[in-house]
Image (cartoon, rainbow, N blue to C red; front, side):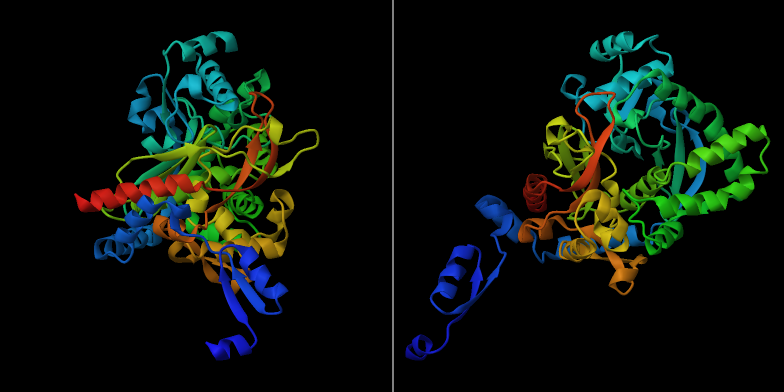
Length: 468
């Protein structure tokens, strides 16, 4: 002790920075570590977490779930109408993004998108009549995730909408997603004007049949290699899909030129895809859904298999916890807003597109996409730092999806909710921002994080199930 008092003081300080500052002011040196107790100090959750750490059943289950995810082979096999592929859509069912939500609780953009879909389906002649149908309980609503599907932003899929068919050819499960409409005033941001609905009709009657014919000529298309190449070309395959869309277009154009449709229609199809850098997003989401659904329902696994939001709540699903949702209020996004808009105008975070981060791309792969940070805020070094940080909360890396900026290591993947709660590091998500009112559309983009409360709830539930 006497030697300690006579020597230079070098301190490692955990937690409160002021303690380290006091050492420095007294002439010593201090390194302050950004540490916090697990579960933000929630003792009950901490005890539940302790049961799960290094538990043989959980470790074995996670190894199985992660192996299923890694071995998945998502393949685009065709295009069909939702009502022909999702049995429940024989009735008046409309799918939406995020956890379950009732009509009266829905945010403005989601209500606007559903009203537009009702008119698109011909169930009502105008928007006012469509709103009455929705409010009177004559339409059924369900999360896309409950039916093997995903949709960006509002995520609305109605029966006659065309959907991509993605088959995991390693495990046999399928996933579906609607078609991307482009930017601006579109249904997925809650717009439902005449031009929005006319575009949806054109997509159903011209775009989808043309692409279906082209795919018949081209054959099935493996999506994981295409996504891997896009990562090497500057995409993170969530908010930036310029390379992936270009690669997809390059593959399909020769087949499109051979189909039996008027040349004007073929030209319009090619121009539409070429003018929409986000066109591949919905394919990326469905591919991620197919990979993660293969890892779902592994008993005792703490691997997260879905993160999603509906503009009201943010929810996660965990492999070892059946189909339960663990939810908390969806956050507002402190991002970059278009001129004339601010956070006061924004709806809370919304969309199924966080399935990309859940699968290890999007925000988890920002190191591959330095250009994305100009749109969502920060610099290239921040993008690399975010990707590195995500490696602390995942089960491993996906060596099929590699990152050139990090010497071609695989993307961090397989979110382990135990590590999230233990470390306090929250999954990062790249996201668009919708106006809180229907019909205005996208007003910005940014980076947000999954809320801790979802994970603490799930930790307790898994620990209780382990005791059964």
